[in-house]
Length: 336
Image (cartoon, rainbow, N blue to C red):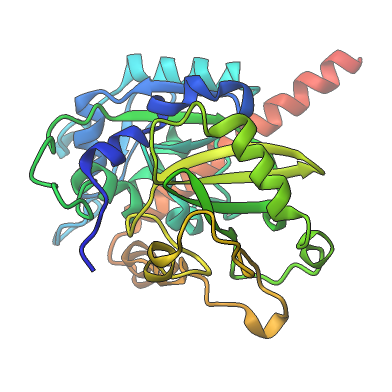
């Protein structure tokens, strides 16, 4: 079926296009313009991680006879001193821990590379490692309009941005995706369909009504799209947090629905299964990110073909451990 998503729809779902209108309903965030040199760096081969002095350690995915070249023979890697300062300031303003994303996507497919398998970041190095390891981010930077019927237009007009969202530990069972067609909700899906959450049975009957009320009170009047998708988090009864907006089409995962059935649903019709969730353990679907869990970087490390990558991974952990030790020392000093 021909897609109905336009370039305009995708651009209107750029984070900065909606955040300020809904700032009071969503997670506190900082939006930083992504410098061209950082965009180029994210698309380059290898992993480059600046150290605390603005220097960097470099890996290279190209075949080399000797991976342990003399440091003086290597081309000096790029430095992002000003951008790093902006990122550091933003992280501090957001209480020290952030969830990174670009205009549309978060690097969820790269969580395997982070220590603790989390997107929780405390430094530019941790952010860059996730972004460079993510196919989702590469797609945002190179083919954001692939699913658009008019994708030959405006493809070079994107202003890329790094979005840093204040870190919260959210219960996956309370995240939901809502599909809106012609201004009306036509479907609601459990966001994480790879797990069975028994607690959803207790709220399944009233949850569609709660989300309908949230949508009509807070979203409808402010949203400049007729067809769209939004994600919400249920904090408590009739208390929701807006997470994100997406276009109504294949560029967005339909989760427990199919895009064909969502398009065929008529706004205003009472759907018996307007809310879909995993009702028993046997209904769990495979994790969509599992295909990313054994990347070539890990194979390189395991085989020893690129030991520099292992060095960079360990460097990230050493920096994290150093910050924790410093915080511990400061705490002990204050207590004395």
